[in-house]
Structure formats: structure tokens, C-alpha cells
Length: 260
Image (cartoon, rainbow, N blue to C red; front, top):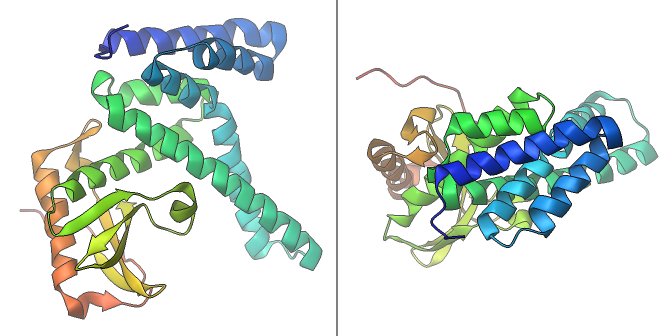
């Protein structure tokens, strides 16, 4: 198969995966149906991008359930009235689930970045919603977050004053670093936010850390547009050059920008 996959290849593969789950879940159960997807469309697939699509779809339902468990754990840890032993056990469970959820985010982000031109946001929403047994809110949140990181990555690549910018590892992501690089010879970390937030610069763990918002309209489908690139780059430069904007773990305040 040619590396320049066309949209029909992804659509056909996604539909094949969903059809297999639907056909086999009644006979074998959902867990075994998903195992069949992994065997046929991940383990036996030689093309890396179709393999990635298979992984993203096969893991969708598990990840959606993990998100529900994370919400339950978070509530219990903050308001559950647990004793020390229960807090410790629930805390370990929570961190394990966070690691799995973060790993999935990286997998989905890689799919969008490497071949998002071959399917639309709506396509991906439909595929993940169906693969997760109708959990459309989970699918929307996953796609929005991953697409924001892809967009911010594209913007950061166009800033020559930043050196060695790369995605954070899963471990770095878990402590809030979506990106790691250098600015003026010192460590710089960046967290991608979604929605409308003012850019934030703070000192975190002894180094400069930025939180940069990527509004939905900055991306066209799954690709950042030129206006979005310029806006995001401008905000990064603004906070880097404004020493008075450095804060210590300041909180965001939601705002709606004034209409031009």
C-alpha cells in the first residue's frame, strides 16, 4: 500500500472495524470482539498509520470507561471521606488510570498529526463515538484536546527563538508539560489549553512554564489555519517578552475576546 493513503482507505478501515465489533459482540461478547479487532487490524497490519487507526479505535471504549473511573476516583479522593489506607489505594489506582489515559492521548494525537488530512473531525467523532459505545462527549473531549496540541506544536515550530521544541513524554505530560524546549538557553515547558484563556507565564519547579490557549476557531477541521498560527505565535511571544506577566501558579479566568 502506498504511504500516501487517501481518505477512502481510512474510512473503509474504520467501517470494517466497527462492523467487526458489531458482528462479533453478540456472539463472543464485546471484550473478545475488541480482541479480534486488535488481532486483525493492529497485530496483523503492516502499514503504520492504519495500525495506529486500529489501536485508536480498539482502545476507544476502554479509554472512555477509564475516563469515567477517573472522574469517580477524583470525586472520592476529594470528597469521599476515605481513611488513609483507602486514600492510598485509590490514589495508586487514579495515577495508573491517568497514565493509561495520557498514553491514549499521545496515540490519538499522533494519528491526527500524521494523517489527519485524510479524514475530518466529524469522521473521527463518528468513529470514536461508535467504537466507545456511544460516548460522544468523551470522544469530543479527546479530539479537541489532541487537536489543540497538534495545532500548538505547529505554531511553536515557527518560532526561531525557541530551541529543540518537542512533545513531552507521557511522564512529562502527567506533570503538566505538553511541550519541552529551550528559550534563551534555559528550560521552557508549555501546556496547551482549549477554549478562551489569556496566555499565562509562570515559574514552575524553577523554570519558565507557559499555558497557551488554542481556541477552536484557530483550527480548520483538524489542521491549524494561518490566522490561528499567527494568533498563537503572537501570544507565545507576548508572554515570553513580558517579564511582568510571570506569576506563581496563577489560575486562569475564562473570558470571551472582544469581537473585532
